[in-house]
Amino acid sequence: MKSKTLKENKDFRRLYYQGKSQASSCVVTYVAKSRRNGVRIGITTSKKIGCAVERNRAKRVIRAAFSQLEGRINGNYDFVFVARTKTSKVKMQQVLEQMEQHFKALGVID
Image 1 (cartoon, rainbow, N blue to C red):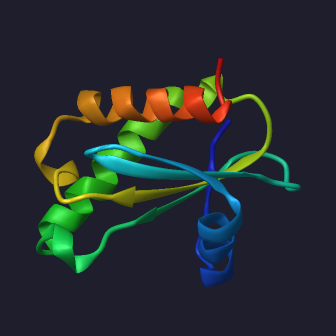
Image 2 (image 1 turned 120 degrees about the vertical axis):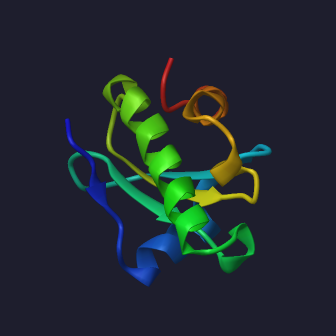
């Protein structure tokens, strides 16, 4: 199942205010149940992370980690991932481990 992307500000705000969240050193995860079929994902990176190259790397790392876990998600969810300063400097495996812990804590995967 291929995830769609969240693009609208109202979707991001809905997750920030109504979704559940988990935070770690590399990534912050926001999750909310969705009425739509499938999974939607949004990624935010602020200028605090660094130049465009570092922000794009952070997004790539988060996207790659999510794609590893995507098949295990049961149900329809919207996700927003907020990159942290450390995200662009670590390997995808570290982000994957933290993301998996978040998903388990939030009840998205078993």
